[in-house]
Length: 478
Image (cartoon, rainbow, N blue to C red; front, side, top):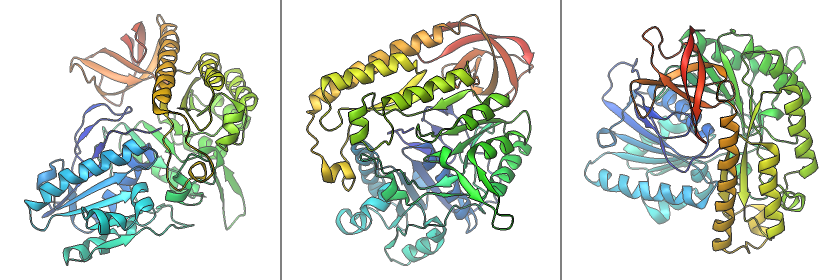
């Protein structure tokens, strides 16, 4: 799941889909003379990585700030999944460069996937940054910052086969104190032809399950009531205990985290259609606190296009997985990622994607037209031959169909009552709370003086749009 808009990680305004509204960081650090400001672009993994960076910097005397002009260190955590995301980063770097010129000693660094992809180009050609740090090199930040303070230009984009940051307790930047992310693995071994992730984040490796369960337990004890387990492909999680030789798969991990406490909700992202097993589905069905929601990217509804994308499944395989989800978890909501206008895609193949949206009944989707990324298999092997006008037209159709399907999906919830975790105030009114049900649908409802963020309440839905449900508390604190 990706977002081209920035998420300001630190005491900041959150603008991604999962954390809308104004939230503030509860600073538990001692006062520091140095402050860092960090913006994150792209997927939830980048947001999680920014919290790791925050923890590393806090150990060397930096505190977070939400005021970019008061920062001593500005960091931008980047995404390379689409050209638009990279252009947004460049625009922000030009803004930061103007601020930097008015404040001698201020440093600017680029982190994440774009740093890995472009490496020294930022230093040599664009001259907008002092350091470039890849996703596996965040432990080196203190030394790179120290070097930059002495006038050096630092680059570390080394890709590791072992790094998981398992021993680092993330600094929960911009947190609402209710929901949090836990990274369970890094990298990706799926060589989708359109994707830069294997090149920017390296090979897949899983974090040990002891540290994951410990982090979930710590979050619960600190008042958090929902965690999202993150990975490029969570279903391929696999960790072998070097002492016992026992292997833990994703279904095992889900169950262990669910058992931390019945009041700790579990979500996860992202699943891959080729790897999600019935064992995982039965584990979800067996535990009330594992949410009935699966993000299952289809990318295309046509088998030939899926083959060109190197997705390693076809339309029939994907449909079988969707049928299994609805059979084992009848009230599950499924969302998706969709790319339209991939190389050589015909109008008939585009229609296959439209029909898949309606057949699978996605609750929502992240929808984009194909953006060729340098260095990928598709860039090397295929011609990006679909005119942008056609791409945009097809994307408009996909968005229209998905909105219709989402509206119907939400209309069916009218009159039903859901257990909702209160996340905070609605972004439109401080008289209303917002929270999500198990199916990951946002519900807005009037506040009750007996409830607060972090509480579970039962809410009856009385109205719905394509994006939001509206309801009223009917049973009080769950």
